Length: 353
Image (tube, rainbow, N blue to C red; front, side, top):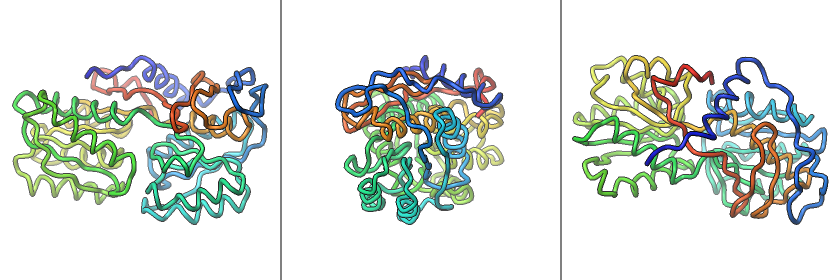
C-alpha cells in the first residue's frame, strides 16, 4: 500500500505554521450550504457556544495538541467558549463524572475521545437529552450515543499503513513482531489491531509473525516497561508497532538506550516533536500520523455546525470547517479527516507539533 499524503501533508504544513506563529482568524463558513434536513439555511455558526473537549486523559501531549492547538483556535474563530477537562488516567469509567458535570453546566458541545465505547454511553445519552451535541474524536462510541464522529483516518488505512511500515523496516527476512497498544478497552486501538491481524494474513506479509500484544495504558513508564518486557520475553523480536503516541515515544526511548537499537525496528503513530531525535539516531525509520491539531480543529467545527443547526448528523450533509474546507458526513455521522501521513528523516524537520 502506498500511503497517500497530498491533503494531509498540506494541512499538516498549515498546522505547523499555525503552531509556530499562532492561529490566524479564518472564515467561519457563514456561506456554507446548510445541507438537507436542518434548521439553519444560512449556515451561520452561533456565537457564544460552550465547547468542551474531554480527552482520554489530560496532560497527554497528543491531546494537548489536538485540543489546545487545534480545537481552541477553531472555537475562537467562531467566537465560542473553549474548555478542556478530563481524567488524569485513561480508565474506562473515568470520563463519566465529567460528562455528567458538563451536562449539568449546560455545555452546548461535548467533544470526547472515548476510553470505552460502552462505559460512557449512558451519560452521553443523558447529556444529549439535556440538549448537548456530542462529537466523538480519535476514539468512537456506539453511534447511537453521539451525534457525529470525527475519524482521523479509516481504520483500514491506519492498519495497512502500520503493517507496511513495519514490513519495510524489518526487511525481506521478516520475523517476530509485537504490538504495544494503549488501553485494552480503547475502541480505536482494538479496531486497528484486528485489522492489522487481517493485513498480516496477506501473502506479502507471510514472513511476519505477531507474537504478542501488550498494553501500556497510555502511561509513559508502563509503556517503557512493557517494551522492555517484550524484549526480555521474545529475544528474537524483530519489530514493534505502537499505534499510540505515548507508547511509541516510550518504546523509542527504551530502544535508543539499549543494545537493541537498530536491531529491533519500531514504528507506529506518533508526533514529529516526540520522535524527531529517535528518527535522527536511527531508532525509528518511519512512523505515521494524521495531524492532531487538524483533528481537534475539525471536531470543534463539527460540534459547532451541529449546535447551530447547519447539520443534524445525517449522511450526505455538508459543512465548512474553517481553513480545512468543506466536509461531507458519511454513514453513521462519520466525518473523515484524511489518510495517514508518513514521517521520515527526509521530511520530519518540516513539521513542528
